[in-house]
Length: 85
Image (tube, rainbow, N blue to C red):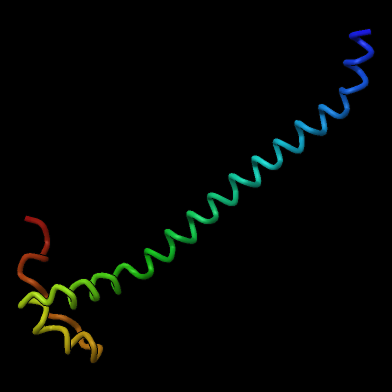
């Protein structure tokens, strides 16, 4: 009797396990995709966030360069940004 019960639900069990596995894989792919899109967006906007932060802080070293940034001019090199010694 127990063997008959086992064989009668074997196909349904197989389909349930297969569906669960594919659903888990789809969920994992969706998570990786969302992470990648967010990481890509942050990477593209990092410089913009730095400029906005400089405008908010408006330190004297940054305030004198902000008009140059708006006009598309290159910033002068900072003395401490040279090659490592």
